[in-house]
Image (cartoon, rainbow, N blue to C red; front, side, top):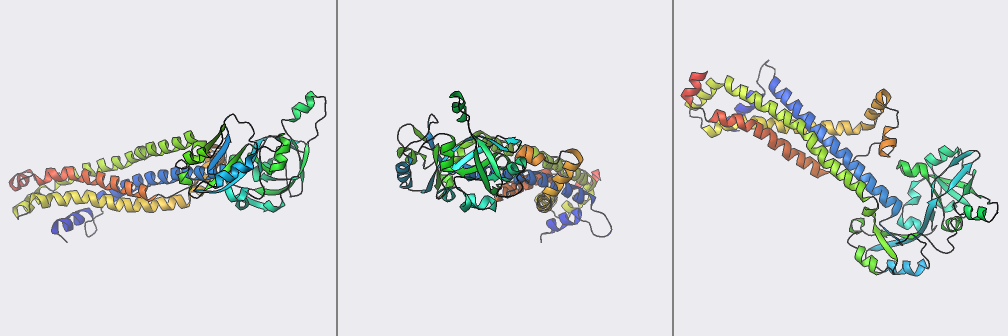
Length: 412
């Protein structure tokens, strides 16, 4: 080990009973900054990843629909054409809309999805979401509810029946007819983890939905699953060429484009805001090293008189900033993993003190705080942290290296 590095470590962590206050405070400051930065980035990655997965789970990778939102007729030959497009794995027709539901005197206005019983699970993983009952039990007289919607309606067990009123019943009222609701039996409960879907969605068969909305043999669109969902935009031109006039294809990225872009922008802004903490710690490092240079003027002079070169003196103080940054980064990563592991307990405690207890579900639409580790975030944080702390130590190091031995001895 070069003597300059050895001396830098000895000054940072002096042997004996001397407490390394400078090193400890500086490392803790850098660690807190790194931890704040990585926790925010990891949680924002989680929000972005969960929203992306929820969009794909709810809408598929591509949606084919009418430009004017009218029903799509004769959809079966169209599905065959879409399946022939390279990169398309599966297709499934769908119909959807809002209805009124009653269980006794308890009403709700959920969003109903009519699915093709044989094809839907090949496009959207419905079976994996069901926590009670099964998709095989769904037929034209049965329904699957989101778990929060079931709770709202007071559904306590499978087999209970609910009344469903569709908007098309208004036409029957105009003709002086008394509309009778469709009575459906609850055969399943699903949970996606996405609060809006769990509390506001019910699933019926495609034929039942066609009957509720008077669609005849038409559907509202076709969902497509791709071999690679990230190629949804790349395959858009080829899929569009397979569509007749009046139909359009919508990639999953465009379903909630503004929201996904807002998350991406917010993540970038929070990165720089959280990095300010590391900058503050770096100023503290620079200030303390300047004080160390002044206090050690005699030592610097003696090193120069003994043959120490300016470059070696520069390494002594510059490497101290690098070591502080390196140790602080490692400690910050450890704190990040610890906080992320107990994130839900921490939020639960905060909610008990200041919130309503449902802040994550109400504001962020998830049952728990999602996280997603991205190696690039850790790499960028490491580069920024080490560069900042090294520069903080480099400034006083340059000043110390320029001192002439005689001048340093006189200043002491």
